[in-house]
Length: 107
Image (cartoon, rainbow, N blue to C red; front, side, top):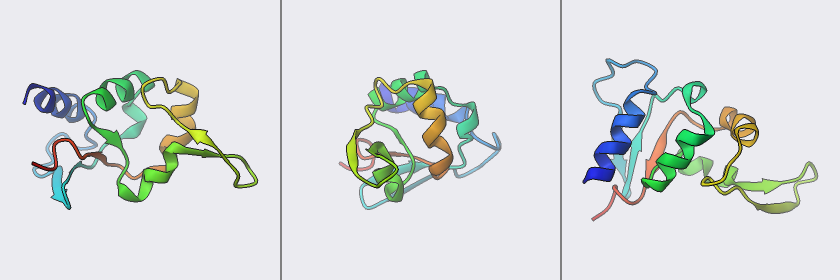
């Protein structure tokens, strides 16, 4: 419970509109926190949130954490625990404005 409260407190500071009444949704065992302004988030914030069980983007964005070269060939996965500021800045524009958690979305 402490990790969930800590993560939601962090995510609250990144809401596009702090007065949003219902920024969360749960679907298919995934808890979503949406209306997040990714421009306020640093790579260090991503490290912290991933350790707490929250990952940027929605299910449709899951493939963004896999690296491909310009020819579409698989290079490897992006490790959110060691992601650099440069890498984070290069992918955040391709993500939806949500964070997701499988850890807190299911029993």
